[in-house]
Image 1 (spheres, rainbow, N blue to C red):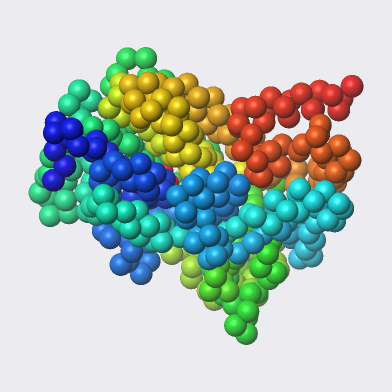
Image 2: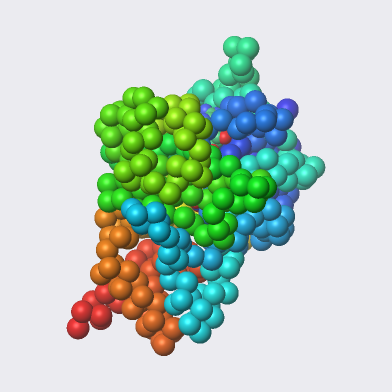
Length: 433
Ligand code: FAD
């Protein structure tokens, strides 16, 4: 059992939450030689056939890959991914066309080179397995954090059978997602800022099966059906299926109550998807789960003294419309690591510096994701929007040093998020002159 650092041993780090961010964080702390204990409320997810919860189908881009690389995980994850080169837009009439494909190959080799590095992956299980490879790491499943004490670092966990365990750690890393139990202690303290916003949209996931053992649509694209207030996207999986995610206001979801209504809704808005998903499967799967909510959470500070730090969605849940939630959470690990190096693992300096450096960036990506939520729905259809994207890319190809599209900075570089936004605002002003 971890007993703290009274005997001069390497400190005990408790990572609460064994999701994507928690598992990667565990690798980082283990690599530095800390004694790492991961506490995850669910049963051992590696043994589970179906992992409940949100999509395990995510776009991994440069920031996430950089963070994986540092602990030798990049190739392992990427080798199980599917590269996405561009977006494929599906029109109301059922036609589809690739967006930015022509521009990307226009000679702007940075875009080609980097955009090829964007992957869709399924890797929850691999990750937690990697965390356990380190001998100084222990994964504890079926441990749900109930409460903890900010002065002593004492945590109380409940097990499925109702028993309780009390565990002490030198540092608690809160990676327990958007509804973080670790964060609850922060909420009780003075000078902690917090805001959360639910968007009116929910999402539902549907599966598009393979046709003759192959993908039903071109696999190396993010498929988008933009319909103003609705939107559907589809991402390929390694088993030749696609996961389609339908984003729609809750009130619209609620209007659809029968299988026939599902079909007529799809006939109006996504006609080409019906034969690909299959009418019968669509009628059935649509009602399998209720629509899921999406929340944006912003807070600061991210730390309490030298005892606790929040990372990933626990610190910054963002709406998924920039494909950056996991990437930002992974980047948290690398930023923390850089600061650990700078301050020689002195946690009383590292934690405040982490808050100082990271909060502006996480808030910037939260705002950007929200901005994209509006933009993707409303404008991706419009000719003016497509033209503007074209011009941006063309200018970037001509002057790669001075004009860099915002999407490129966010997705294919590690430019700090808030700097990327500042630069974009500057570019917008220049363009108007
Ligand atoms: P989580 O994944 O939420 O993990 C938290 C873990 O903590 C869970 O395992 C949970 O069981 C555990 N836990 C919770 N409470 C407790 C407790 N009290 N005690 C112990 N354990 C606890 N991001 C991208 O980068 N690219 C994408 O393409 C993308 N697409 C998305 C699509 C959708 C529809 C959604 C909703 C999100 C998407 N994201 C994407 C965001 C991404 O899923 C999240 O940012 C990421 O999963 C956050 O990881 P996390 O480890 O911080 O939190």
